[in-house]
Length: 410
Image 1 (tube, rainbow, N blue to C red):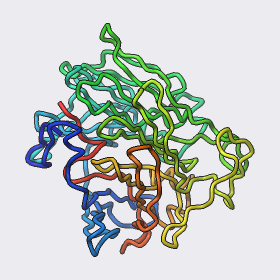
Image 2: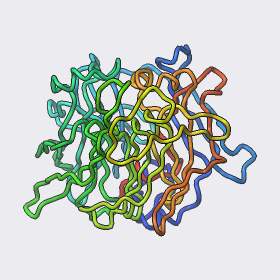
Image 3: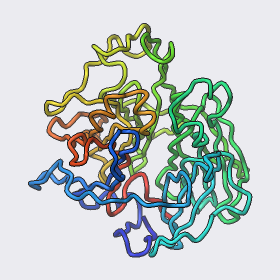
Image 4: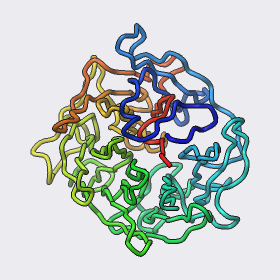
């Protein structure tokens, strides 16, 4: 990113310059033991992703990151031009919904206070992205921690306890100036502006409704949102509900703003769309990496608008992969996509109990950046089921020098 957070990261002047950066050699992943039955602290895993290294595809340095903290249910972090770190919150200390933001000192990581004005938090929170050249930040919402922490209950949807709004913030005044209601937009999670700092549009993935929505700035300075992708649900037997959503849990954009990627955690597919025309994304790649509808599993698909048959289970290096594609991270040059399979331990336990018993995995997908397309690397597998203290759930992926889903240019 253009502005460094303290002394970390090399910094690139533009997103296109970042695409010329060196190939990634290590990846950081927070790993979770909660709800797995293993009494051990969460930790930060360092994974070797350098094909020339003798430790390729191995966890080389786990570090204990477990510590008591009075801050509640934190999620997304971004560096600010001031050198501070800003982190979004899902709730207050009692587990009630509260979409606020915590500021940390970029050098010492000491808490400095909240970013929003006193009493000005959103009703719910989750992810955020800011675009200083348009004096704007937009945040998303999942649900209050007390609602989601023990698993998914369909009755909570009927009760209106899950989010369906975007919050538009004035970046300089630190206050909400507009609330966008999403049509077909239940549980808007990950949000991404285009990387171009002049861009006044981006995308958000709505998990439960399985839609991608484009948000954009109007001529008068207000913001609007429209649905541009719909993943149709599948009519099923042997599952929680008669219809199974794709459950879009993570999205990202390539640094040249050409491709959009997202994961359908329940259906089990990873998708690539050409967004050269942001209003009309075009599907250019799709790859099934496990999921709930594989052949031989408990779920029978009765009606499918996209597939003629249920996909085969995924086996990589002799291991059958449990779960579905969830968190994703793209190499700076856009040619490699890394994928993990755990969403949230309580939901993992409910939808993919094998994940709890076996641990999650990390996979790598080769990307065709010319014509579009996705192909699994059959020689890459990091099995977190073989960790020394027991099976672990690996989550978000980050590079030491910045990446496609954390860097913001100013």
